Image (cartoon, rainbow, N blue to C red; front, side):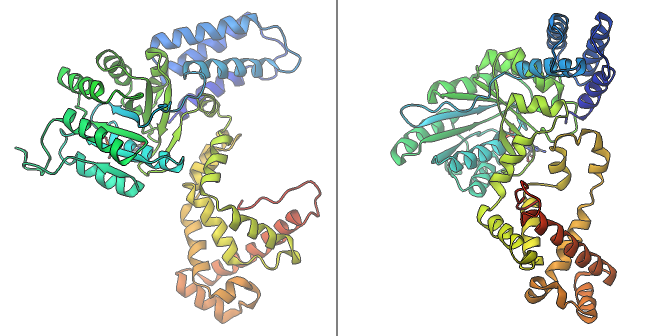
Length: 455
Ligand code: GDP
């Protein structure tokens, strides 16, 4: 999402490389470029002014530090200022002392509230909570049903009004008063000991009074610990205007940015925390339930600056990696010159990595990859699919010991996986080579190198 901004900022910093000290003119020129970069990315004008003013002020005031060269100094300042406009500290849900904790979602139609309810439900469940999702969006045809589907996928219960009278639109949509639904849901949650209640509310295509009135009425009924304003990061400056309207009409405690996987410029979303004075608490970056994370201003800032997002990667890895499996694979590599590590283990490890998402996305999060973006975009997932298909066409014995792969076996595997025999040969040769190298690393022939399970 922030590719262009990243490119522009990097080129602003590049002109400082190799400079021994920062002159007034250097600072001015760099700040001009930063200003253009932010404006082009659609960051709100008043936010840009304040941001650039702060960077300039601090850059002028910095004494030459022994540790950092001028371009590093500026990067550090820009990084810190970015963290500040994104809200500073990471902030997550404040749970009520006396359950249930109520989280209410508000925002325009299509912002991603219902999808978010499922993601939040899954996330809360993972943290050991027992959440209840409440369908208080009785406006949009099918919204209740959509929440039920999402809840089922997330493994979380949904409180929904009984399907009711058919609406004028013809859809089988429950009619009724969302405030009443919310009240019943709260009673239900208390009876059944759910400790978190996530209330999905109706949105409209645009900001209107009725929408605000309804959201405010639901809010008054359920008295949420957290009202989250959900906003589509792709809608540009409208995001800022909508945020202002919701801040006035309903009031909210935190922001959730959705659709950060889109290719819009996204700068408007970066302005929201600053403009509303409310922190961004979560970010959604895809349609799957797992495409969701706590928002960390510091990590987002370093991602924008192209420093990678190693922490996010580590967390994702922790979530998807099976530690036991990885430890077993590492142990196999460490003993007997790695000969116990077969193609089945390789396949398992590869699939674990792929569970984290498309390879290009994973590599994109590694530091220093900013300048290799084109190559990363060209990573051919089909090549990886082909490797999987080849290994899957092998018998267990062949996977355990690729040495038994003679000509006729290779021909059979090639037919089975729809590739040429040379592809099979290639894979086997590369695997044998890689296993040798990995087992040398894992076996301690290079002291100080820990094994890297899975990668
Ligand atoms: P609601 O009207 O606010 O409840 O919005 P929905 O949850 O129904 O989402 C609207 C559309 O956006 C759906 O098609 C979702 O699949 C999609 N969507 C939601 N969040 C994301 C996201 O983070 N990334 C992408 N690409 N699509 C999303």
